[in-house]
Image (cartoon, rainbow, N blue to C red; front, side, top):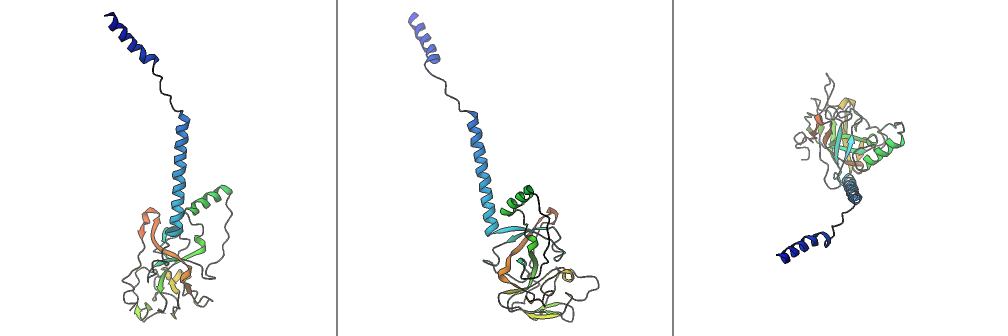
Length: 252
């Protein structure tokens, strides 16, 4: 009995003196790892956003009323930058393009303070804002290279390659009898576009600039991309249609 009690005592005591408790990791190291992971995720998100903006899509806002009622002032749109490099431009596409020369009036903008400027620069870098929207224009493609565009037939319709267009997307003043204000007939040169605003009587588009040195034509190389959808405000979210049926038969 005594031997059993001694063995039991030795076993109990061995757990107290023979095994050292495991050291605990400092909590500060765990926070450092957490902060590092957050920073890595943030940097990865910035890189992905930059690549998407550079090669796929980007955002613009609408600064004027020339595309009403399709697009309103301050609408935000998503633009597919694969057009026209990989996806060809089609009749009816709404495209964003750089000024072909003298279409835009120079505007003065109040300089922002350094903090606002830094935030805008960061958001522009990842494609969440478009501070250069005022340096671009947005119109609907009416004529492709080789097309003959005319205004208007006896019923006031715009005519492309002899086909009168029924244009449900345009806005014209009450009492107006033609799809656009001025009469013209042009043939679109190679590598160029004829573009017009949906707000036909209030749009400085190709017909408005036809007597300029540009002739009203927009080089395809100036096209930034095709507008896909309205992303903001939420209650105006919508895909932007190119009205394929309106231009049916034009290519033939």
